[in-house]
Length: 58
Figure 1: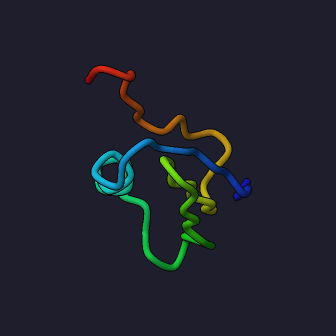
Figure 2: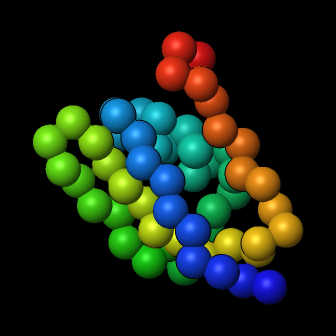
Figure 3: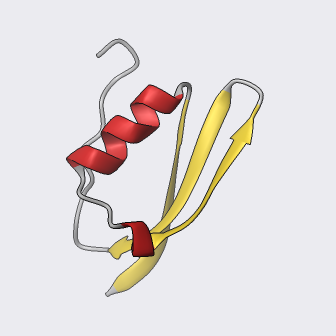
């Protein structure tokens, strides 16, 4: 089932890496917001898929 997911990042480089590594399509991205010191992405994805993420120091 396709659901709405979100994740946040401390830098735009990490956000871009997340999008590229998880092959998130442009049409699946609802919005990307920016607040001081962080970016948040809201996107549609399959609930059975666990996205690739990296730790704070990777």
